[in-house]
Amino acid sequence: MASIFTKIVNGEIPCHKIAETDDFLAFLDVFPCAKGHTLVIPKKEVDYIFDLEDELYIDLMAFAKQIEPAIRKVIPCKRVGVAVIGLEVPHAHVHLIPMNSMSDMNFNSKLKLSDEELAETAKKIREHISL
Image (cartoon, rainbow, N blue to C red):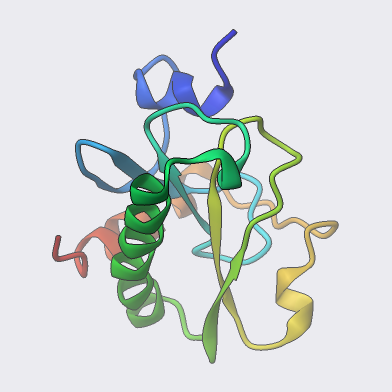
Protein backbone atom coordinates (compact mmCIF):
# COMPACT_ATOMS: atom_id res chain seq x y z
CA MET A 1 0.00 0.00 0.00
CA ALA A 2 1.32 3.44 -0.95
CA SER A 3 2.31 5.80 1.84
CA ILE A 4 0.56 9.14 2.25
CA PHE A 5 3.71 10.75 0.80
CA THR A 6 3.56 8.55 -2.31
CA LYS A 7 -0.06 9.61 -2.70
CA ILE A 8 1.10 13.24 -2.52
CA VAL A 9 3.82 12.56 -5.13
CA ASN A 10 1.20 10.93 -7.38
CA GLY A 11 -1.18 13.90 -7.01
CA GLU A 12 -3.81 11.85 -5.19
CA ILE A 13 -3.55 14.09 -2.12
CA PRO A 14 -2.88 17.84 -2.42
CA CYS A 15 0.07 19.53 -0.74
CA HIS A 16 1.55 22.98 -0.31
CA LYS A 17 4.50 22.42 -2.62
CA ILE A 18 7.76 24.24 -2.04
CA ALA A 19 9.98 22.66 -4.70
CA GLU A 20 10.15 19.59 -6.91
CA THR A 21 12.65 17.79 -9.11
CA ASP A 22 12.43 14.46 -10.91
CA ASP A 23 13.58 12.68 -7.75
CA PHE A 24 12.51 14.85 -4.80
CA LEU A 25 9.63 16.88 -3.40
CA ALA A 26 9.51 19.49 -0.64
CA PHE A 27 6.19 20.58 0.83
CA LEU A 28 4.83 22.15 4.00
CA ASP A 29 3.88 19.92 6.89
CA VAL A 30 0.14 20.38 7.52
CA PHE A 31 0.72 19.67 11.22
CA PRO A 32 3.81 21.87 11.71
CA CYS A 33 5.97 22.29 14.78
CA ALA A 34 6.61 25.86 13.56
CA LYS A 35 5.42 28.01 10.68
CA GLY A 36 7.40 27.03 7.57
CA HIS A 37 8.00 23.43 8.76
CA THR A 38 8.86 21.67 5.51
CA LEU A 39 9.08 17.98 4.64
CA VAL A 40 11.64 16.88 2.08
CA ILE A 41 11.15 13.45 0.54
CA PRO A 42 12.52 11.25 -2.20
CA LYS A 43 9.78 10.40 -4.67
CA LYS A 44 10.90 6.79 -4.51
CA GLU A 45 9.09 5.16 -1.60
CA VAL A 46 11.60 3.71 0.85
CA ASP A 47 10.47 3.28 4.45
CA TYR A 48 13.70 3.91 6.36
CA ILE A 49 16.06 6.74 5.44
CA PHE A 50 19.16 4.59 6.02
CA ASP A 51 17.82 2.04 3.53
CA LEU A 52 18.12 4.62 0.73
CA GLU A 53 20.83 3.92 -1.81
CA ASP A 54 23.87 6.05 -0.97
CA GLU A 55 23.49 8.36 -3.97
CA LEU A 56 19.79 8.96 -3.29
CA TYR A 57 20.51 9.65 0.40
CA ILE A 58 23.24 12.16 -0.45
CA ASP A 59 21.08 13.82 -3.11
CA LEU A 60 18.13 14.04 -0.68
CA MET A 61 20.27 15.92 1.82
CA ALA A 62 21.66 18.17 -0.95
CA PHE A 63 18.09 18.95 -2.07
CA ALA A 64 17.13 19.78 1.54
CA LYS A 65 20.16 22.07 1.75
CA GLN A 66 18.87 24.00 -1.30
CA ILE A 67 15.47 24.54 0.37
CA GLU A 68 16.83 25.81 3.71
CA PRO A 69 17.93 29.32 2.60
CA ALA A 70 14.45 30.08 1.22
CA ILE A 71 12.81 29.05 4.49
CA ARG A 72 15.23 31.24 6.46
CA LYS A 73 14.52 34.24 4.20
CA VAL A 74 10.77 33.98 4.75
CA ILE A 75 10.46 32.79 8.35
CA PRO A 76 12.29 34.81 11.00
CA CYS A 77 14.46 32.29 12.84
CA LYS A 78 17.94 31.73 14.22
CA ARG A 79 18.34 28.42 12.39
CA VAL A 80 16.48 25.82 10.41
CA GLY A 81 16.63 22.60 12.39
CA VAL A 82 16.90 19.24 10.69
CA ALA A 83 15.19 16.14 12.04
CA VAL A 84 14.77 12.61 10.80
CA ILE A 85 12.33 10.68 12.94
CA GLY A 86 10.99 8.04 10.59
CA LEU A 87 8.19 6.59 12.70
CA GLU A 88 5.16 8.65 11.71
CA VAL A 89 5.09 7.90 7.95
CA PRO A 90 6.71 4.81 6.38
CA HIS A 91 8.45 6.89 3.69
CA ALA A 92 11.92 8.37 4.20
CA HIS A 93 11.74 12.10 4.89
CA VAL A 94 13.60 15.02 6.40
CA HIS A 95 11.97 17.74 8.52
CA LEU A 96 13.24 21.31 8.05
CA ILE A 97 11.93 23.35 10.97
CA PRO A 98 12.51 27.09 11.50
CA MET A 99 13.60 27.53 15.10
CA ASN A 100 14.57 30.18 17.59
CA SER A 101 14.84 27.77 20.51
CA MET A 102 14.97 24.03 21.13
CA SER A 103 11.27 24.02 22.00
CA ASP A 104 10.45 24.84 18.36
CA MET A 105 11.42 21.24 17.52
CA ASN A 106 8.74 19.80 19.81
CA PHE A 107 6.88 17.18 17.80
CA ASN A 108 4.29 16.86 20.57
CA SER A 109 3.16 20.46 20.14
CA LYS A 110 1.75 21.20 16.70
CA LEU A 111 0.47 24.50 15.30
CA LYS A 112 -2.95 24.80 13.74
CA LEU A 113 -2.57 26.89 10.61
CA SER A 114 -5.33 27.53 8.11
CA ASP A 115 -5.09 26.30 4.56
CA GLU A 116 -4.77 29.94 3.50
CA GLU A 117 -1.82 30.50 5.87
CA LEU A 118 -0.10 27.38 4.57
CA ALA A 119 -0.70 28.40 0.95
CA GLU A 120 0.68 31.90 1.55
CA THR A 121 3.74 30.57 3.39
CA ALA A 122 4.46 28.07 0.61
CA LYS A 123 4.12 30.81 -2.02
CA LYS A 124 6.57 33.09 -0.19
CA ILE A 125 9.13 30.31 0.27
CA ARG A 126 8.81 29.22 -3.39
CA GLU A 127 9.68 32.78 -4.46
CA HIS A 128 13.16 32.28 -2.95
CA ILE A 129 13.89 28.83 -4.40
CA SER A 130 16.52 28.61 -7.11
CA LEU A 131 17.03 25.01 -8.24
